[in-house]
Length: 307
Image (cartoon, rainbow, N blue to C red; front, side, top):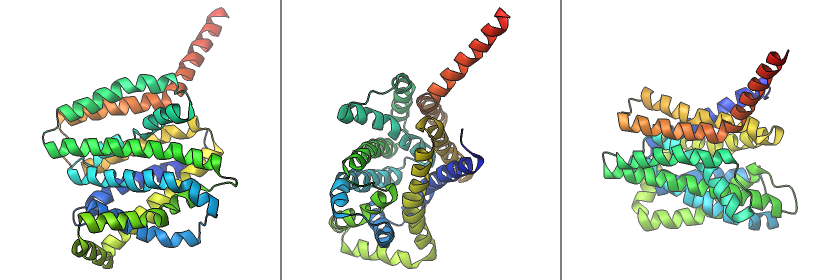
């Protein structure tokens, strides 16, 4: 059971990650997804001084940086830009623990628990229904991009775990995340120049002069990417994963709330798809706790009958 202060930290962390989806969607109205990722890494780059890594740790974190820092963020931006929406985008992104369990089994031979396997049924049904009933092709593409983004995030989690194991010295999650900036900024710059063109890149750079865009980039880089990740990693080290993971379910709840507050239209089919995905997330994250509660309930009832 988390202490009151840590519960507040867990709620604030999930709120930050949900709000980041909304702010990213706002920023992508004027900035391309690739240039957005470049600007995010530029903003994070100075933090290398505060969170340094040793030479051998840079080599350990390189695969994670490429998968998480490039592929995950690229498809995340493309998915939101294509029209995945704040509500469904936040839900689909939360599938990353299921992908992490799958990659952990394939790469580390860590067997997923039965609740992960059961959760795949409503999750697959929800995703299929969302894709099948999507009113526009671009929305369908957005959903697929968010799924790929969640898959790369799950793979990045497994690679980060392997990097921490391979490192000869303790590897701070904050230092690892900050290292994404210097390791991937050249790739993001090359992609931005190739896809957007130098004129578009320069125009996006100038947008940082606007206070609104500066605050969004600082939030996406410093608070969401580094700060929230640091807070979450502290909670995971302090408590068991079973105690902390249920709080991640607040992220899709917050994104759904933001969708309603911003006037985003959620049709009946989208609502059904969201409910199925949320059900799958609840089973995967809280199935063990619910099973333990049911067993305890029937045990107490049986003891009462015997008396």
